[in-house]
Image 1 (cartoon, rainbow, N blue to C red):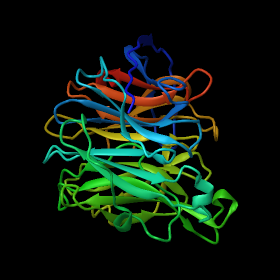
Image 2: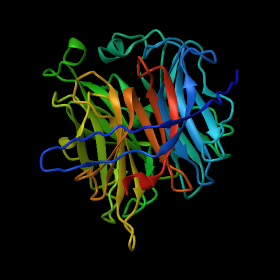
Image 3: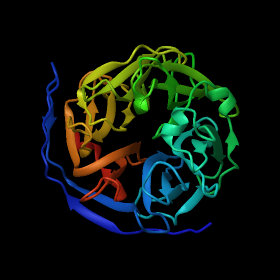
Image 4: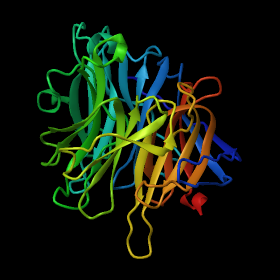
Length: 394
């Protein structure tokens, strides 16, 4: 393995105001304070042609784990490794680049970590396929391989990882073609009858005579996988269909462990889609438009920042390229909801230029950590880590 690091620190002041109003929703845009940025992974450096698919997690000790794919080339297929950098000082400095999984010329990716706060174990769920097989061939079942599901774990805050273990047989329907975990992070349910359950948001492709995915009779769907024995075994949960895939989730504050899945949508309305589970991810409601959350058809991230306790409000964060221009990924925007995702009155422009996939975490000091793809000419030039204070919404 080759280890490397990028420790370039930038300070920027973003004064971009952005205003959006969905039906029956009003929003307030505010100017930004100074915010710290780090170009954590830069395409063309440290032995990789491109870095994609960020995922960030805060461990119980406060260590930040920033995952991504290191790609030989820019595309979604080919020689792709799963990488990690660690920070033990709230993102001020970062470790050298660590290779978590490298299977030669094959594709190892879609990092989706989750921390078991009851045991301290960090689980990393991910996917694999032969490097010569692309998504279209896998969807059409014309590839030599298919997408498989794997998991590894760390007991030392991400310093070392167990050997990847395949869990495809219990987490993927054999009739499915494509499969992706996340991208982003999983959650552990905090309340209700499924308290302690680890849940990983995922997606898949399936045969559908009415579908049009990749110019064939196929469709996309989202689903969850979960573990009730602290990551030792994993099970397939319920599916959400049709026309949704890459997803993230939050637990709602009803005390019952209700989950809300936020999904990339292919309904052609440039809005995110939401679905609800009342049984810990085993079944889901049909997908419905999230009217206030515009998107250009892209991945997004969502995070429970604060539970409503005493005088504390419920706070959920959402981050995505807030553009209704289909296919134009730019204007990365952070939003805050105080009513369990019904409305999003807090709005902050984070990066007005080209920007795409992202991940969110809460630092132990209360600040918000953002890991996202962005650049000057292309959204895939670098993966940036940025810290903003929660007070920007006050």
